[in-house]
Image (cartoon, rainbow over all chains, first blue to last red; front, side, top):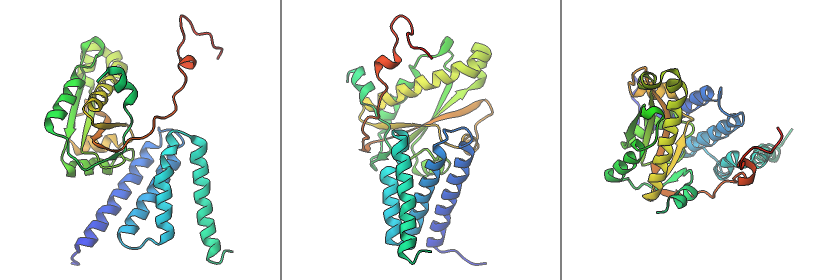
Length: 104
Length: 175
């Protein structure tokens, strides 16, 4: 049997937590406000980048995306328009990144 | 502290420092909880105070609505059996929810008075927490209240104007 290292255990715990977050979010989104769906998805994206960051796998672009998410995600609770604009901008960040790498 | 200052000053805190909360302070907070009003004085509530970091981490795993690292957490439960025995279906289905909500507010105001931040969270896996804590069928976890010393206190969110929501004598608005 393959023995796991401390780093592997940590990574497994982090993925377990992320998966539990996603599953619980899916269940709760059945009753929660509609806008909590996008909120959970974007929070999940931030958590995933966090795991990649811990593993040394997140590049500068992803780290910046995570910072933007953490700085803006709570606008969902105070300003719907601001939250949607933040999601739009984030989507464009990904498009710009693809374009800078050659585009279509 | 003036009650009104606590009511207006309390915020939903989502970033906490690492500082632990002394047990004495938690006891004071829970004392405030049990002095909350309840329909027919049913007091159909139970509270699980979680201080252990490992236990907090486990609850967080099933709580998309929890942010930051709280020093403690209170699982606010309804006792459906007691609520029904005291006040029938009305107690079980409606009053007990109102009662634990009032207890929750007492908890958060008492915490604020002690310099401790809080956040009420409903976005958690109710069935998962029930399973983790081996709770019997009639004890339902309904609310998590995170507690800790604030690292960051959010700005007050916009409030609807008093004049928009308070009607003196009778409601004069159409619709």
